Length: 285
Length: 288
Image 1 (cartoon, rainbow over the protein chains, first blue to last red):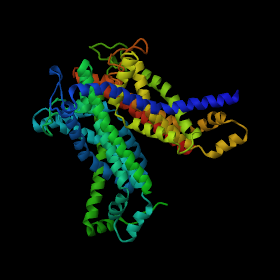
Image 2: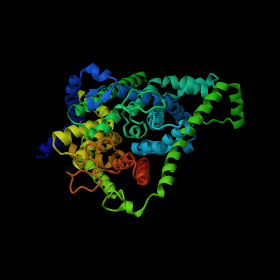
Image 3: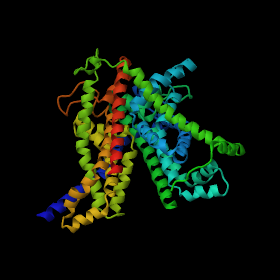
Image 4: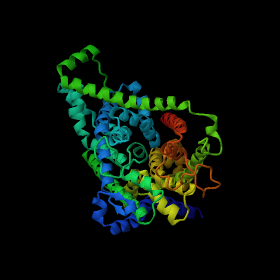
């Protein structure tokens, strides 16, 4: 009887553990099964490389949104990564012990603020600011990139800081002993040793930026046309789904799911890159 | 051992004049740190100060009308959604972690597969969860736009988080606890539930609180699973919007910006509270 209970619970634990495998399998299955037929019907090149998205005329080219996602993400990386990198160096190597704990919880808070609240902040502050400078609609690629640059800070800082901390102290001490200044030791001895961890942090940041939906919708303008510049509006893959899913039917709906498939493939590639980088870090140490 | 920098400020400045690059890098580091934390403080203070005056009593009326744009139904829906999602996800995640830590052979292929899949899940953006929830729970299972569809979507979303934090908490329990329990004649199951799990509770709780934060702030995964009806549904099969969805709806309609401000304040306060709570529990783990 007791033995039966032990065995039974073990099987229950095993099933629970397999839920995540099942979930990934189901997500792949349902996305691909619902999205791929649409891609086939539209034509893979027409879909991926088509420059026009006009559901009312049954024209489904998703290239504007692919480029939109890439541009906004690139902007976020340009704005966010330098700040995140130097802040991580500060947290790992400069921060006085006394203020470390409060700053750490501030960082957790930055990560915990919901994306709608970020979006709202962008809508009531960044967008009007850009409008007052340029005199045109402030819902632009610049606004989205700025906001995403802020939103990826905690992700990139967290991973980068951990990578910097995992470098053996002897690297730093060795450089100091050779007469290097604190900065020279940190930037030319510790940072290169943490390289792959730092890159993993940046790639995670890219994943976060590409996948972000609500904040981008609220500030990016969402025009479904090819991106035309930093001070013009654009639409990302994620926004495309949320904006049109509510009323889409038939092929339009399937084309939106196919948009999700494109996004999902991007994310899978990014995940793969991160896990390869992490493996390299582990082997390196 | 911590290395103390015993240079005085004057000596430091002197060293910097000798190495301009070092001075430049130090300036960049300080500047970036100031920017990061200034942005955070500014964001919170800005929304709280600008928004607090829009909090009025009729925002807390139990029925939503286009006149009052009450956030009370959304607040209650958020609580329901959180409760239902945690009720399913916590046992599932904890059991999965128990299997990984207590039962599985370390380094076995199955464990590696489960790890990789959990990692993959935690990298998937919420809109993809939303799409899946729409296709599977709402359409294939015919649950429609409902609190239940939304909850199950969130369960998958927070599962990797709960698994990871529970795993860490279980691993932190010293092996001597298990050995002592086995030595006294307790079986594996008894050891897990009576000895290991109670010792790991604070760590698990920290994960649950983090998960609560994600549920409260989630929007993209819920719009097309739980729907956007602004009332309290009669049961779990009804559609209802959570606070974050409510806020998105208000600000995208653009008719109730003041109420959106107020909702932002409430959301921020909840997040601040959740953060404080997890910090509080983390402190207890360190002490305990």
